[in-house]
Image 1 (cartoon, helix red, strand yellow):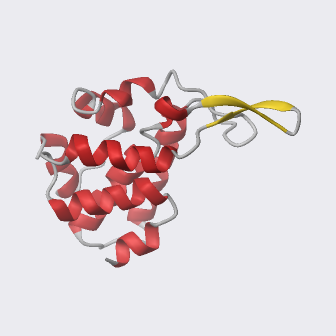
Image 2: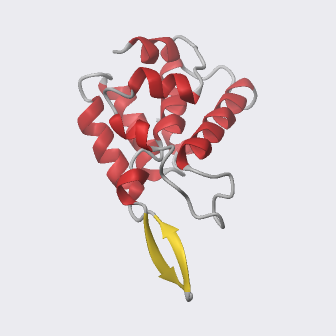
Amino acid sequence: MSDIIQSIVQGASPSMAEVVDALGERLPLLHELEATPQDPQWHAEGNVLIHTGMVLDEAYKLLQTDLQGIAPIRRAALVLGAALHDIAKPLTTREREIDGRIRLVCPRHELQGRSYLALELAGCLGFPLLDLVMALTGYHNGLEACLAR
């Protein structure tokens, strides 16, 4: 298990920049998040790195309030799931005409992200943590189911 992942399991709250620095060699798509645009109608905040950092910050807020005291493995899964949930957007983002307008879409990025993480993190995370992170990445809306496991 990498040092940053171990620190997250132990309660650390690294910034998105720290996650990219620590895991970017193992997960090179992290380095592409900043250059990956998002459709401004759905994500006015900007590129995927900005969005992901905001999601990570919200996860930390939840962990200080509603999810305070959850098991360390579930806490780590939430942090890693937030930081990695859009990992495949660099692979899937493209333009598509929708209702006569050119829009940015990223079809099936959740499932591709889950597969990517399964391959790249299999030797880095124990199965229970990997399973939870893959669930959060692959289903984005699976927070309650993930934490109930």
